[in-house]
Each structure stands twice: as structure tokens, then as C-alpha cells.
Length: 179
Length: 400
Image 1 (cartoon, rainbow over the protein chains, first blue to last red):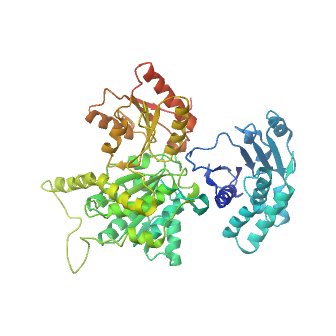
Image 2 (image 1 turned 60 degrees about the vertical axis):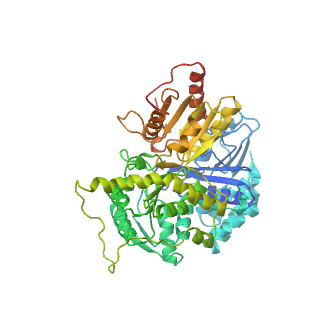
Image 3 (image 1 turned 30 degrees about the vertical axis):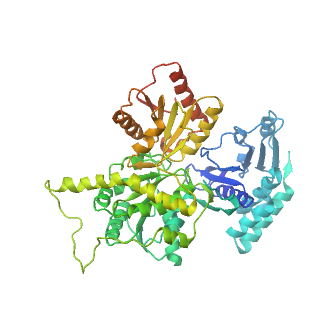
């Protein structure tokens, strides 16, 4: 998962991993920080498995790539190491030419996009975009159900913040499109 | 080993798991300095104390030097004491670490292993603990969050044993473990209390029973007093085994002094410590698929160095690859390399088992399973061709 400090990349990775546990899959999530400040690029990793997870290194050949930052979403760098049948989910209103071209070298890979920022802003705060992206990831990959993600969100947030995060996630799930 | 279903596990970062275990261990005093490079271990603990979930004295001190000083003083009153630090923090504690062990304070400390300045870096390596390895502390390395959680209970039980009475460091890789979230099997508070009843110190500071602690000792006795730390160390492997057996009866989980994987018929042994062990284990399983007889030995008890537990695994191997996440500039080997070579020398095996010592992953540089495979494949080929194995320290993964 790619994003920038302050966008909730690490939180999104953790929520996804926690939702997988609820579905009886082993999971491991961890961040890779550069300088710890808002705005700096941040990566977070999630491993999901039916078996206990031993490998602790960074993920070099992801089966799923998520970009929570709209700017990073147009960069081909996020495709590094992508599995031939990989799935890419980006936060963007559309898909940039270079990205389309780059992914065309992997005909079996799939690219999805969602205007998560638009959704978040319509709910009044850009910080809801990670939840919108989680909804999109659930739909695009099927690795976890919306229900499990919802349960995890409910343990973490309350009140209006919870409601808006749930709405963002639901809209993300509904609106994600295939490129 | 019995495994719980993932849905029965609690999602926690290793730091959170440690804090939760420390709460369940019902510690009396925590003294810590909450600044980078700290972990959220002490943050969670301060919340537990503040919420009233943990009835302990939380001493917010002004430096790590003070943190360890406060821990020593608290421990001498008979209290159960915990602290946590990392990199520069451990370095600043350095002189007090020796006081803690020589005054036989059974303090438990979690060390999120991180690089030392300069350059300034907040990421994982083992330089911090390696700089403190002669301070008379028992040191345990954990490979994942579950081990970290379980080792907290074991560490207190071991440290507070009257035959041991030494401080214990639980080493967890910074970021790779401290910030990694996974499902943890927890024990109930009542089980924790049964396994770890309140500390009963034999000697402690008590005005009704005056005693001297931290006295002066000149050449006539200093040496003998220091020697007692070495004697206590010798008892640790057996004691840890006993503690682990009890813990196993309660949880079904046991780790041992070393984690061995496919060592029975291995020709090349891979030795490492910390979070890299899991990655190395995967690499070994891949090497086996390719017909390369590799085996893994993860050093879980590092001080005292568990020679008797390692030797049976390696005695018939044809080469050892020792991976150190710290360097010892100017030394003939990096820290774990030194220990392994000494062990082989004493066992009369130095000619039979050449050692290739790698320094890797400083300042948080990652190591992948593919890299472990590459390293072991090369050594295995040399062994097969009866070529001379490369000696000296190899710095792995440097940019050219």
C-alpha cells in the first residue's frame, strides 16, 4: 500500500489485516517509514495466508498494490514487482497513460480506480479516503468482505467519525471501476 | 505446537503485545523515558496505569540513564520492575546496566533493536544490544509478536528465580517487529497470575532489616562479586528450560534456546537472530526444494550463549553461515560470528566446520528470502566442490 504520511496508509493496512483475522486467515501488516512526518511517502505491507506467516521481509512481488495517494497513483513505480496476475487499486478519477501502458505488459493483471478523494471530500474530510480505498480493495480483490472491514472499523472509531468512515467504505465498494 | 485459529487471535503490534503482557505480569514499577527512539510499549503502559487497569508506579524520568537508575532502585525494594528502550536510549543506560546485573536486580526490559547514530537512523539493527552484551544481562531474541508476548512472562519468572536474579532483555527488531501487527494468542489474567505470582525477594531494602546495597568493593572482593554474575549466568539455560516447560503446560507453546529447522541432515547451517529467522526459515524450505541441504538455527537465547543447545545441531554440518545484524569494527568477526567460532574451537570442531560471517541489514536495510537463498547456495556449492570457504567478515547487500 502506497501513500503519504497523514493519509492513514498504515491504519488502512492494519484494518485490512485485522479484518482478515476475523475471516480466520493469518495476517501480518507493517509499515515502512521514511522520515516520520506528514506528507512523506509511506509504504505499508500486508501478508495474508491460510498458514502461519514466517516471512518478515518487505513485500517485493505484491499480488495486490493499493495507492491511497492520488499523485502516487499516476506513477508507474507503484507497479514494481507486481505479480503477473496482480490487482492494482488506485485513488484517482481516471488512469494515467503511462500507468495504462505499463500495466499492458501484464495482460492478466487488473487495474481498478476510485475517486476516493472525491468521496472523502463529499463527506467533509480528506481523511476518509483510506476507508473509501478499503471498500474498493474489498470489491476489487475479494480478499475480505465489507462486513469484516465494517466490524473492524466499529472497534476503532465511534460516533460521526465511524459513520463517515463506514459511508466512505460503502461508497468505495460501490463506485470502484475497472480500467 | 498447538495453534489457535486465526479468528481466536487478538490483533496487536509486537509493542502492544509486550505492553499487554507486562500489564498481565502485574508489574509494580515502570520507569521510562518517552521520546524517539521509544516504542509505544511505554505509551500503552502509561495508559494502563492512568486508566487504573494496572496498579503500578509509572515513573516518567528525564533520560534513559535515569530510567535504568530508577529501575535499579525500585528493584532493590523487592518490586517487579519493567522498562523499555531502543538504540540511543540503551546506549545512554549503558553504565547503569552493569549496576543492575551486579546488584542482582531482576528487571525485565524490552529492547526494540535499532541502529546507533551517526548517521541518525531510527531503523532496525542489533548494534544497540551488541554494545551492551557484556553488561551481565540475560538476552533473549524474539522472532515475532507471539514470542515477544510469551517471553515477557518467562523473562520475569526466570529473572526473579533466586538462583538467577539477573536482569533480562527481550530483544525485538525495531519496525520489523515493534510496528508489525499480527494475531496474538493471549493468556487469561488468572493464568498469568498463576504462572507469575507476586515477586518474593529474599533480600530487599527495608528499614526494619537494615542491609547494604551497592557497597564499595576493592581488589580484595570485587572480582568474587563480579564472578557471581558469571555463575548465575551458567544457571540460566537450565532454568529457562524449566520455566518454558511450565509455560508449555499452560499454553502449548515452547521456543527453546535455539529455533532449529531442518538441521538433522543439513550440510550448510544458517545462523541468525531476530525477525530475519522467519524469512530465513522460508528460504531454507525453498533451498530444500532445490535439493540443497540447508538448515536454520535461530539464536533465541543469546546471553548466556547456549553452546550446549547449538552444538548437537551443527556438529555434523560442513559449513555455517552466520548472519550478524551488527558490526564489530576491527574485530576478527561480528558478534554472533565470534560466539559461534569460539564454540566450535572449544568443541574441537574448528577444522570440520568453516564459518562464513556476514554483516547485513544495518540501519534497517531489509533482507529477503531470495538473498538468504543466494548466500546459502553459494556456500553449498563451495562445500560440494570442496573449495575453500571464504573467511573473514562479508558485508552483505552494500550498494556498489
